[in-house]
Image 1 (tube, rainbow, N blue to C red):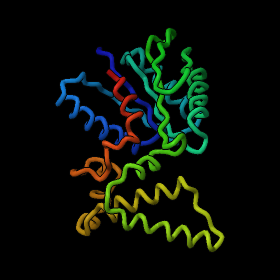
Image 2: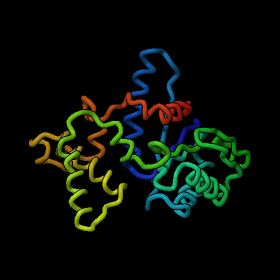
Image 3: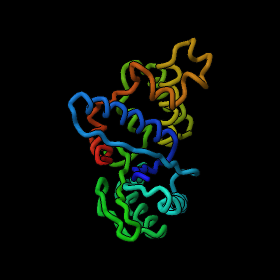
Length: 227
């Protein structure tokens, strides 16, 4: 059976995002006759990111290696508040506990795991060293964000009344409102579960996100290594 590339991601939303980004990158590469890269399978963490969950998923992959022989395994997680180095340390600890011998010196670096006979790497999704997918999506928004931007007034109201909302939760709410109210028509909102979901928003044409934004350059370079 032919080798394949596998990318472990935190959630289905990460999966939808990377698939769309790769589709755009592939289209451009075809135009300029550059080599095409592929990710053949995505593995989503079931219960969000934790060392235990990542170890479980990596062990699951190892049981499949004998059957499917993946050539490359990439791991993509969010920087969150902890930052890139902290998540790199978490990934290395999980790799060791799962039975890999490779230690990743940095993100976007492929290391051959002699014990398992595969190449391993990781990427930490971030904006200026911290954040998550929603943080990045806010950075690459296109015009027409009135509904979502008005959430700032709502947050200020909360603060005046002694209430706080975490930036992570605010960003998720912002993205949800942007997709549903700024970028979905009234007719589409009548079928919100079919027309305004995270998956659908990534497939919209014309796109509602700027997939040519400079903030994506680092991630694109990493994905381009899956040749």
